[in-house]
Length: 477
Image 1 (cartoon, helix red, strand yellow):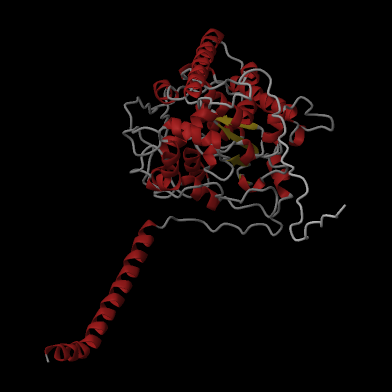
Image 2 (image 1 turned 135 degrees about the vertical axis):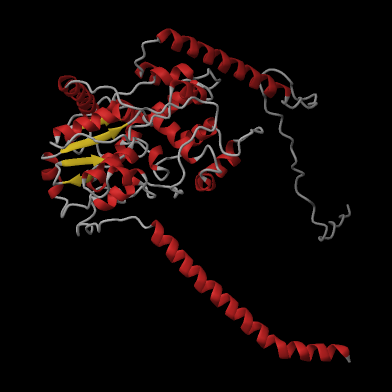
């Protein structure tokens, strides 16, 4: 027969085929391993060995260096403008202000921080009877603040008497390049061409101190910088980098963007990634503690009320602030053309924040209230771009804002209330239309007036005569 012959031939050749397949797989595996090692070797950054973590780790609740980095991304990804927006990149910085002006500005910023810490009754500025004017909502926010200093988040150089708490989206990549050149790890040409994230390399090259008890002593002898940025600009910069373009950052889309789109997209939109309005709705409805570091409050990360910072660096004046910190620490001035690049302009802010409503902006203020109050930022510009919307506005938040253009805000609130009223009337009319008609009632039950109990129906049928007993015999007379 034909089939048994074919089967015998297959049985004879099968071992040889399996052996050949095994050899091919082995060669492919070995070759792939060699290619991977060569690729890693070519991309390997030079990193100094960092000291081990102190044995008594446990100060604070942070997970240590590199915590909060969130979604892993390709280092080739760079923020870019995917809309028709104006992107400004600075060239030569303006001449620095005088030392007197810088000192006055730093004193003002520190006073704002210390007053906020006193009001919230946190850390070094807490007292036994303090915090009496904290509202219920603020107490919920306050409960999330770490109660001990997070020293493990601070980069310290004892040699240069310099310390900094880098916060995501506050210019820390630019600062990381300055720190790497400061310790002599790279020159100015090399640090610009790094394949790795500069701040990650800086964290590897600034080891922990030998003990947690040593931190207060060293920080008291150093220029200790706290990084800050307008909370809403920080969110917008993070959105544009992580979520706006899935092709440039597929990891951000897979980790967050896809879920946001599935939950909040109600109508077709050209973009695959979430819109800024969808991103804001996601933030307002979720706890950000375990999300991207840039979506968390800086107050939760850098312990601004527990650590005695003596300098606050604003992203908006990053170059001059860091230059002055170098000067105060006795270091040489920058000798670089690696200037700070600002991607957000008023036109860019208007394009994005005009997508969200007044109520949503106030919700973001409520969520990041600590950062607003500790670093002295306001909603003046961003609230001017908001649209009215039809959501209710919290009057307590409105009273808390300090704005110069109150007329615009009052008009915006008026339009918001009108739209909210129209929305309620529309919902009431729809509810009335969908209300089921009254069924025909029994004549004995009144259709109007007070509801009355129906008369009870007596279903008692009395004792039943036992049919098993013989009937009584009639007696004769």
